[in-house]
Image: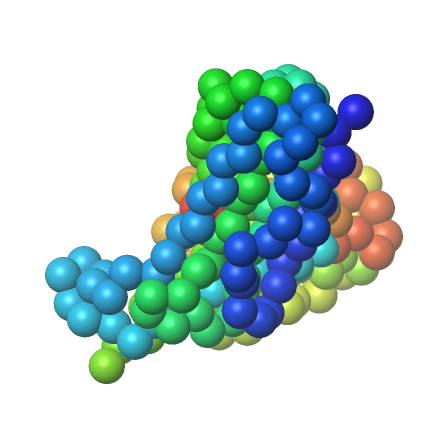
Length: 129
Length: 81
């Protein structure tokens, strides 16, 4: 049974190893950080303002993470999404998957992101310079 | 019964409010409830076809029957990540 943790956060996101580290049966750790770009539709911005239906986002994100962790037989899966204002260059999305072998962890991270972008009620608006 | 609507992103901006409460007959289906909402806020109509609907924390379809106190969210295309 995988250890799964999802959180909607308002502060800075940094690399997060709270669910464990390689060792034992874990041979792969895949970590993804989605970072706010400095251009939106070609125009420079200061950052993005993320709006979120928090209660629903937590339920939907947990469902996605649990289903993904089960399907890919992960050891652990951590998903953090920052909301509120996120400056250019800072992390808005963090996904970390641990598994016995690389392919499962790589595919699981992509699956979580694809489903998050389809079903989790979060919206963004550019904040201009 | 009283139904609470929560409007998000472009729908919140279009309506000029994030929350609306409307009295309607008990057991009203979601699709009819949206008709009632749009009668009151016609500026939402252009977003209706692209929006999904949730009751509480789960997506539902238009056949879902509402009960007193339900919270209905209109979810325009999401943009997380």
